[in-house]
Length: 628
Image (cartoon, rainbow, N blue to C red; front, side):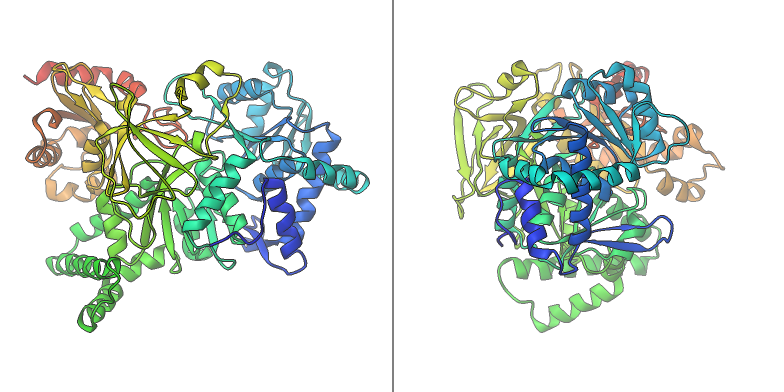
């Protein structure tokens, strides 16, 4: 479905949307007012007024084409206002994760040479205070939080908007001309990768990168002007920035900002979005909560649940081949919805047309369950360096366990891991196709591929080969035209016996179990695999009485023989069908989850594998010392 306006830059997108919707009352954004506790719309007229005011302030502060403006903020209207104002001046957005410590904020501000920093809360303002002397190029800070004391070079959001509105009124022609002068090949943003090792790298994204990716998404997914997207994934990440922001604006949909990630479950039924974009972890949690409820229920409840899932899968299979379920199956599916699936729909707001999962692999069982429940869950694949989408499941018939078809305008190749020779490739124009290849490194070309890493030509040279292919670092293969991801090359475990083992597919076997919150497989240079497991404590505590754990909690609970036996049985069950070199021979349960806050996960929810292994080195060595 085409975009509602034509555009070649983000500045054009904004201006053309204002021309289309200005004066109509059409809602652009939405948020919950902290004072009234009411959900509030921002019309395109209101958004235009605020964007122009902040563009005026940036211009007053000397921001010009190519200058960098950093944003250290959660998803909220001010994030979009800051970004759009920055784009109008031809300047460059530098989005920062709010979970970053002050030291990493300082690194990115210095590396990017940001001229201005916009912060949201008091916590983020304190980071700005702490880094100011380390960042000599940083000219000033704009704070959305109230200033309770003197802060060096800091202006309140309200004062900036007031000053900016007055300045824009005088310099409107000049600022409008700057917006018209922006070209598709100008930089739009620096997206700093949340690398699992070393300092983050600034991915240079042009307007062409974002625009081509958003337009390609519109060719395969229908977005309508009455659609509503609840935004909660960090806008500093390419996935939400393109899929949940640029593509939504281009479709005329409304973006409503969740109060916080923690409040998403409460906000979903309040906002009733029609589109949901998330990472697999959220869908896994929803699935595990449902599984836990079923496991704790009666035999009758379990029977009804499994009957409903099987009925849903049968109905989904009919739709996949273009058939309409017969009257008996249709009646059964309606009953399954009423008895089981309606509760899931209600939790998601009751109006979700489809959901999108990205950022990590989606376990096949979860995709199939949501489809059986009547919620189409499509999976996308890409990287920050690719703006980010490279492939996406066909919405009419997603093949779970794969990441779908190559996006229009994009070409994906598979290169042999040893020789680097191309063993197969597809573009978005090659469908339908039944191409099947062996596994190799996934490489890509297209207008969405970054121009390089900021101030880092060496790192840029490492990821582009002599033929111009961008090397993703992921291993995958084509199966009947669908792309299947195996794992990251750098995650590959080489056992002492020389076996190459990818931990991702193994870990996926466990994360859908109600007893498992997180799991990380270990085994580099070892004779066998082991695992560190974070139990799902709520589920475990609910089973404590039947296990006879006598009120044990924390580490004492995890050490209880009955609890240990639960997880021993889980790994034994997996081992029955696993290849010998992929069996997990031992495990240790750990109390504390791997989180961004304890620096065991990246801001994009990826495990920092080396850091975790170092943090739990005594447990790891214990496993290899004890198991013969």
